[in-house]
Amino acid sequence: MSWFESFILGLVQGLTEFLPISSSAHLRLTAAFAGWEDPGAAFTAITQIGTETAVLIYFRKDIVRIVSAWSRSLTNKALRSDHDAQMGWLVIVGSIPIGVLGVTFKDQIEGPFRDLRLIATTLIVMGIVLGIADRLAARDEKGGKHRAIKERKTLQELGVKDGLIFGVCQAMALIPGVSRSGATISGGLLMGYTREAAARYSFLLAIPAVLASGVFELKDASEGGHVVWPQTVFATIIAFVVGYAVIAWFMKFITTKSFMPFVIYRVLLGIVLFALVGTDTLSPHAGESGD
Image 1 (cartoon, rainbow, N blue to C red):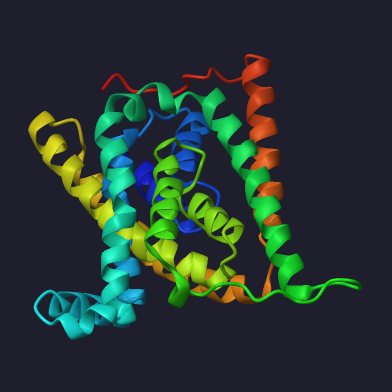
Image 2: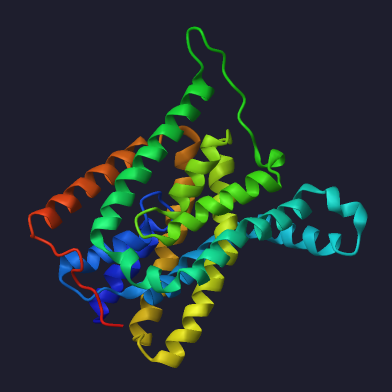
């Protein structure tokens, strides 16, 4: 991997990690379109440490408050009803599905799941799901001629059941093209949460999963020697810087805007990808590495 490739891939990771369009798919597609070797699941997981560091810094006040309340509630029963303490447990509970499925399907994630035909399918299908969820949220928020405005749920109303459902949605993002934020936000909107609540919990829920995945891949990569470290570290730094800017923009965007631009983009990209593969312009395994 050249320095230019690592810069572009780090830029793509930072730009797409928090948007509901799938960073893993875009890293895969960037390599395929450019004729580069697939950076692989290990590169994706490690560079995601950069974007998750951006999450840690952006949500640092929330995280410190939640961790503090949760840790104190372990010895102080009176604090166990505190919302922040409960959020600590809900993040743990919501992380279980992706942890279990990530280990179970590790070989598929690094192999068959990176087929461009599967990525095209998930881009389109999950784009449609996000579009439906977004329309339902908009209908509740705006009401209508014969329909009153419906109050949507906030994180204060999040319980174990919904936390697990969020977690299952996040686990779907193990398949490139699904999108971690897209799946969890869609799940949250379909369960009746506000856009801001769904996005905030989505970002908090991703922290343990992404950091654990990154550390796991760091260990494997160190033992296997199949990661070009200088370029990977460079890409991770680029992903951090760009990712922080994207979080700040996205959290403002979702308070007033619809997700429909992302829906349209996903569907069109999926159709174009199918057309390229269907006409043999692009191999479904283009750029795949031999790792």
